[in-house]
Length: 304
Length: 267
Image (cartoon, rainbow over the protein chains, first blue to last red):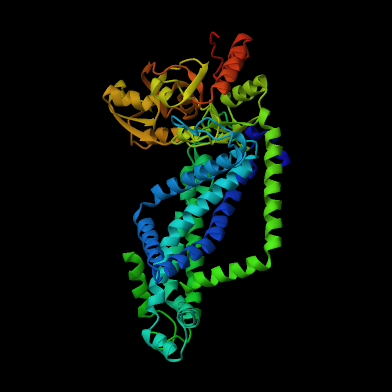
């Protein structure tokens, strides 16, 4: 990185550190922090979408849709996350390649499953074998993001479902009295008001999502945990910057990062809760703040 | 379900109004996909071979300070690809899932210090060995007696060493990475660690006398070969030819001497 880094063996103190902390590997470590943010940015809209669809499906008047919604929320919440995280990306990947293979290589006679092997023709590969590594990484990342969204979407669906039902019945009755249709009641009364009830549960979910991001590492995405482990490991004399086992130091950096992220989110959600519950008829009167319904929703999440 | 009805109606109206446009769009997309597939099939002959490695087992393979795969196997792999006229890229994958990801075609070879064993051979195929059988050694804290090899021994999951310890009657504690097996000895979780001699000798040297070799080296496993899908006979044949040619002209022996402290092998 710097000019004086050509011969690291003869460096010490400040110079050694400034060279060490700017190696290509460290730069990868720093950029991997953005991977965490990218995951949060990509998954949150998807989680809310799955949450809404799930919640709406659960109270649908059409039986198959209702069954689908209930199955989705209960099965996904019941299955251990790790199993789901390992299963979804692999199944998606093989599913996509299978379809591409059927479509693009219909003349192919060999079976796709050959013993243990899953083999599709070269042009059906997703991404192409000749693609750059970053394309493979991005593809893997999006498969992982989708797995996260499906899992957390089920929890969000449950929270949103509870929140929609928590809107005081008297308000809905008022809507009916005014001659509103079911759709109008949903859009004009339930939807704007449910946020106050959903937010505590959703903020809880957000916190869980933040600390679940290291699962990316399980899925083969090189996130901050991967690089911290990789950089902290003992470096023998074969490396340019030999050092002993420094994993503790690197993991403390991660600890600070995650605590900071939680702290900032906490502040943000407190503000948001105040905002969405302003002027709402809550159990304690008409002012927003820490009121009973929050603990109600928390229980909801805990039981879920 | 009113919301669904709304969406459906919207789509129906939208579709009838824009039918032309949508059809053209579909054609364009199909066209682009076709062009893309032709373009890639043009490269299909010299298609890229993805080399899967662990990147955490120096001197065999490791990720160096600039973040690239480095080590003995990097040099051997690059040379083999050159001789076989293949374009190769390197992929780092955890040891735990290195075989499953090969058989599901996420990469095409495993070149990660993997000993050829009958068990693994049932699932994948191996090329001829490019590194001879290397004895494994036990390492413990300095001053420990030889008895520790019968106590609690750390080994990496799914390795020949883990299987060996389990059979030897000692208690095996398994870890996902080689690094953790050594850390377990340092913090007293295990009495000794069993791994390839070449990996441990570096660690012992760097430990400033904290760690030392105990007991006798044990000869387990065959040589190290490149793992290849059983259905990929062509690639196996190509690599075997390349390995044979590297053995014949002595370049493989030279690389082994370079990375393993001047070790001489008969190839």
